[in-house]
Amino acid sequence: MEDRELYGRILGIQSPWSVAAVDLQPASGEVHIYLSHDALPEWPCPECATPSRLYDHQPERRWRHLDTCQYRTILHAGPPRCQCPNHGVRVVKLPWAEPSSRFTALFEALAIAWLRSASQKAVAEQLGLSWDEIHGIMERAVKRGLQRRQSEPVPRLGVDEKAFRKGHKYLTLVNDLTRGRVLYVAEDRKQESLDGFWSTLTPAQHEGIEAVAMDMWDPYVASVREHVAGADRKIVFDKFHVAQHLSQAVDEVRRKENKALRAGGDDRLVGTRYDWLRNPAAADARDRRAFAALRHSELKTARAWALKETAMSLYNYTYEGPARKHFQWWHRWAVRSRLRPTIEVAGMMKRRFANIITYLRHRITNAASESINARIQWVKYTARGFRNKQNFINAIYFHCGGLDLAPAATK
Ligand SMILES: [Zn+2]
Image 1 (cartoon, rainbow, N blue to C red):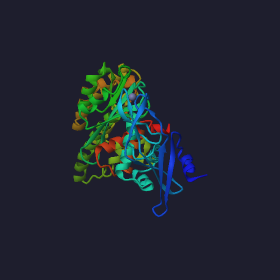
Image 2: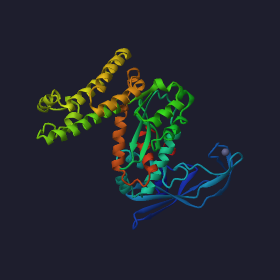
Image 3: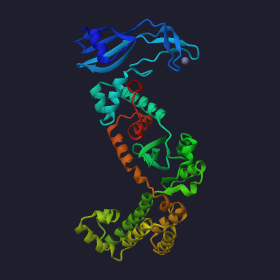
Image 4: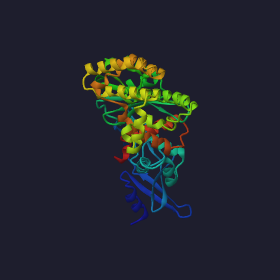
């Protein structure tokens, strides 16, 4: 078998295309494959497939392909242009590559498969790609994936914020809590950040929204109110966000009390910070016994802790009526507690209660986004080469969007 035929087979080059020449360059470890095509008078238009007259050829272009026998393999061809009666002069579809890519579709598919499980740095090194090339492959993959996305119902949404780098740069994420994927990423955490999401949904998807979990963050509330019918019955303030506020109150009380106790030579609260914050069930038995004594003490910190635990038992109720009663009772206790941080959180919970109690109806939290968050942490960790926020946003879609990323030519 001749070189040309062999390479034609290896590369899967089919009529009207064929391999015209093979130039093996052992010194540089490269093999250059020159493609040509039969003299077809007409080519299908890339937009509408209407047979269209051959117009001319673009100058020769190159595509990096999968290595063959350790040789870096580069295809060369001059893409024909045809003149469609409807669309004018267009470059024809090439079976081995997506338009405007410098890689063949199989090469991109390989890079995409590796990028899903290895760091960008590792893939860049293994395949000899630059950061820009890696980001280009990911960006094209995400664009394809978003275009192919179906409009399945998204009844349960979670709106979450993510810090981008240290400091105060944020991204807003909208998660599909049913399918555990990221639907939308936008810069910042303003109302506009979330506003952009709603127009990506079809009217049927809009109507199908049953509940939206989120932090107690007014810009998000405002956006949902403006765009979702019956928003007040659908917004659910995240249970873990509520718990976090209560925990912060415990911590503030403890810090202040610890200082006062130590001044009098009492070290009981020293080193107990995490005992108060973690779930007691998670501690080992010895720690649990030692901590039980503290919990049952007359300390203010113990009182703040009991208030937190009691507030959270709200979430164990099945019915709204008894849950409301529980909250009213708890709120009266909290405001009389003389613990300023706890009183403040109690006030906030009372103001926000209408959308805290909605939990009992919808039973959603942003914790369903935990696996997404874990993946985003991984994305952050393995992609220290982000030059800008857009690359990070693309990487989130790439890894967490549940998208079909493969190049069309490989399907
Ligand atoms: Zn056309």
